Image (cartoon, rainbow, N blue to C red):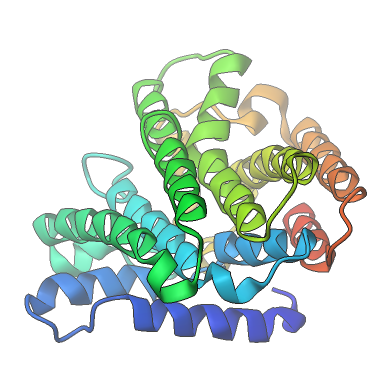
Length: 294
């Protein structure tokens, strides 16, 4: 990723480190498992999007710490559960053994449960720890709950699971991508903008960026599952084909899928044009997705 993001990423890691329960806090095996997946690498894309959206509307990123920690914890929980044998049955995540391969399935389930619940514990403390207004904190709880639950990420995962081995139409595939992956990305961007004090017009522009960014990200993921390599991606490739999942490359072919990604990235850039804050990070992140190889 862009070297100019090094300071951003360093600050994000510090926030996560101090937010998660200490590894040796009883019951240690649970907290070790929670930390293993949350602190075990990753692009921190959603955390960067939060900070980028806050800056893009002229906000103070110091207020985003608790929210970005909560969202990264929810993302980590979703990956733990996603890798379980009853779901996608993956052994590798972020270049390391999946959580259940290290701690066992039972502890992995509990680690995911702990991360999800502790995320809302952190959101409840935003006014005390980060000076966020109570009505804003409640609004952020709404954004995350709506986009992480059955109306968002979990709903998308459910449709993805029941669609395995079936021929599905474009509308269903679009639903999966916009919910399983796109919903939490949208929560990140909208939450960052809300913390930055976005106007209705600014929030609409950020939401437009989010919709296109999320779709571009997932289509690129589909492409990389076909043409990428496990070493670069940090996870097994060819999984979609093995599970007989419908994907954009399968539906449209690689060339058309890349064209759709390019179109989404252009729409991301257009969405930022009316914003008066610092849009550089969001521009860079859109460019990263457009040229992503891991």
